[in-house]
Length: 214
Image (cartoon, rainbow, N blue to C red):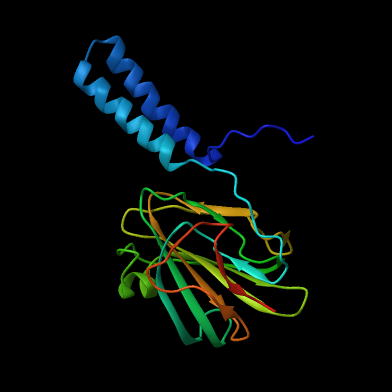
């Protein structure tokens, strides 16, 4: 039997406890306005680190979104950083109101985790995409395809968390990390991918179908 799971990311507990404790202190001291602000802040932090369950499509060929948010880029490029070949790039921007837990878009084995130090420009700009701090996870599928998921820091996001390690075998829809307080995720896919997503579309991690990788 599966154990009940608290729908809040573990990394959020220190922030939730801190804001909750400060709010409690203000309430005990009868500082009404600061206490109300504290309640609002604690509620927001709790909401930000929410980690709801998702229903992932069972079709083996389906490629799902690695992040919640808005699709801001769908283009064909030459990926010189990760796959080192022509590829499709799909970028998803997460604002502070989106769920920030990232999920595996397609089942496979982790080949490489590559941390890229950088700056903290706004994540929805070209400068941010090229120069911001990032963590790239390259995976290989059992059919021989390779793809890369890149967690990109942003103007507010200053902490990328990636739980995956090289050699891990991950299932589609499985949680592999998160980014604190807003950012983006870039997905680099082989040209054999049949994309079914477009710029401006709202997507959900682990649920929304981005295309088919056959």
